Amino acid sequence: MAPRTPAGDTVKTDETVIFFPTGAWLDEAADVWRLPVHGWIFEPEEDSHARKALIESLASVIELPPQGDNALFRERARYFLVDNERGKRLRVRAAGVHALLEPSAPNGHFQGVLSLSREQVRAALRTLDCEGRWLEVEATLREGDARRFVGHVQFIAPTGVSLISDIDDTIKISEVGDKRALMQRTFLRPFEAFDTVADAYTRLSDDGVTIHYVSASPWQLYPALDAFFRQVGLPRGSMHLRDFRWKDKSLLEIIGSSKEHKLAAIDELITRYPGRKFILVGDSGEADPEIYGEIFRRHPDNVLHILIRNVSEEIPDLERYVAALGHVPRFQWTVFERAGNIPRVRFEDFLHGDEQR
Image (tube, rainbow, N blue to C red; front, side):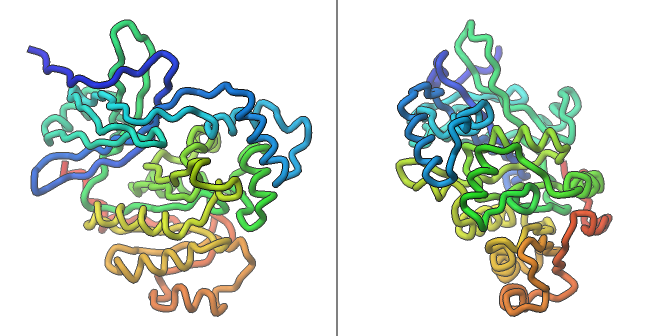
């Protein structure tokens, strides 16, 4: 008899679901894999009054020209104007396992954790198209609804090396220090990658390093960031962006302070994978040296190396770096100018995760 699908709320025909990429972990005490599911359910908002208000707000900050309401602007801005669906309990399935998630939050985000035995994982990885050990998670829709809303969860071994990377001014040019330029690069201009960062990250990924992207960019920018990552060839990884609602924040906080969010997200990653070593990559534009220095204080045995892209033209001997990273052994942090300077290092001593599955 086929397993019974748990009852849940139906995704209506005028609603959309977006899944965010996550990383699974092995719960050794229970001898099962835990697959976190994180997504967003909303109704696209076509209200011209809301869009007009957003355009007017942007215009006051970045001197938006009359032709600013173009296709690129509409695509980027429309995710900030959706009608978030709260209190929805979605049904999802992965590798034949069905689950009913917790009710969606006021921002439309839903979360839950699926559990798979080692045998179920091995069977799924053998029979499904799991490139890079990624597994599909799909929303269960009503009969007759031909749409597919699919997300992906990566299996991350208990041991190995992970790279935690910032996005703004580390991977893509954002000019976070200049609010007007930041808003223009966010809404009016195609995203632009720094030099050879995709090549550098791909080399590390090819060496077995798992990628996690942790950024103060809001989740509303995820569709644009995902398309950008695919365009420039950045390797896939779990995403850890920031919650943002118009009701709670002002326009200038679309790219907000990163410290609290990043500390919490990185703390959670290291706590979830205590047997892994972490490379932390950020930039000098805002607080990454200070954030990563604090992470080293909390998890000195887990931080393998700290890499800071120099976008503020500061030299490593300045008082700022001494204050932020003075407690970190000097051989464990590097300030670099170009991604090509990121060394290609093989971490064979740490890459023993595959036999854990």
